[in-house]
Image: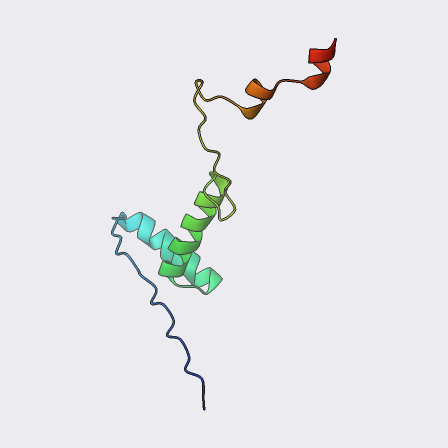
Length: 85
């Protein structure tokens, strides 16, 4: 009996629009022709590079905020070496 393959989860895309001046569009087209890429791929790579350089990369470590009133386990237990002396 053949095993059934799981269906791959569909990738969700969001539509984003922005305006460029004619001079900016000419520069983008010239860059894409020189590097043999499409404007869409250039935009995606530029956004990923920008996010990586500004702290929003894939391996971002999120530190939870700890308030001043939150106690630590070490506040209650104390240091046994200090208690003896």
